[in-house]
Length: 180
Image (cartoon, rainbow, N blue to C red):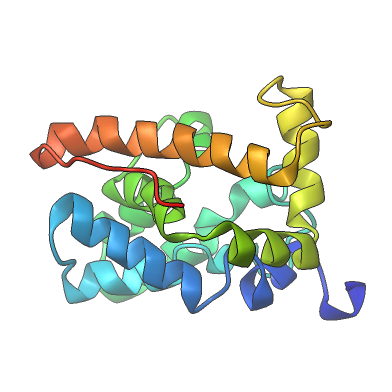
């Protein structure tokens, strides 16, 4: 798979952050949490992860900076408010740079609700992301490496939906359920 470039590039081409599917699921999640996004917000959703292009890892030092490219692009188009919306979509980036997580963060988390295991896991495997994500999950004690990939994904979905639900109830009392 290395013939397709870095793990970040593979993620955008056919992996977890696939450039058509992932923004679509984030758009659906935004709509569920906040109502239909504006044109500017839709553009932010479309470009929020573009910074993974060329990244050597997803959650390491290189990957943590991924919000910057999309933020720079939308900032030039729409101004600082939208730049901050994209920068704040990554909780890790927001914590490191002492900025608030944005509405896009919670829509991004909720987007996993629209992922079916039999579509998500092959993409994550083919791009190489699954190996990195599972290693991090094991190292942090999130889930043991001996558990199945489906068990890991279900636990990840539960965690992300719980976080999005907490944020959603602050916004407009959204009830979220885990889809199969």
